[in-house]
Image (cartoon, rainbow, N blue to C red):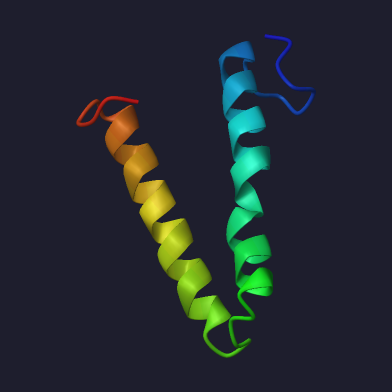
Length: 65
């Protein structure tokens, strides 16, 4: 188990690359579109909740990953 240097197994390596490339996409898009600071936390919460629901469903095998 060499992983990414933080204790994760090697199988997590592709996930780290994918996550790093998309984790800031919402923030960058919100900045470009000048989303008001008051509504950004709501949008970020919806984004993260949806992301983890999809991840959980993929792990459970309910959707194709």
